[in-house]
Amino acid sequence: MTFSIGDAGAITVKAGNLLIDGELSNNFTGINSSASLRSEGNAGSITVNSKKLLSIVDKGGISSSTFSIGNAGTVTVEAGDLLIDGEGSKKKNRVRSFIYYFNQPYPS
Image (cartoon, rainbow, N blue to C red; front, top):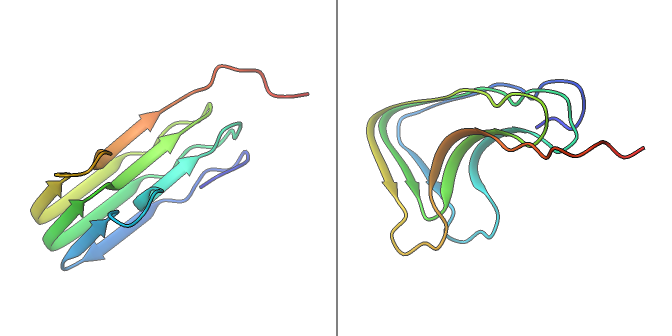
């Protein structure tokens, strides 16, 4: 994550089986690279390689995002098998790259 003019770092995850489970959390649970509000840097790219099963369940996610003027990074997922299951969850499971920009002036 970046809070300033620098870029957030790239993330690479290599695993046999990988489980991202947000069931017991009220916050984001998963793999994330982001540029925070009022930062000027870019979010980092994310690469996930799971040779066997990658499971994203119960509000889990993989996300590269920006909340300011920088760019979101790419999200690349390679898996032997992929399960995305949000059944019974009020929030969505996510694999995403997005930009959410507040078009507001910086405070002086």
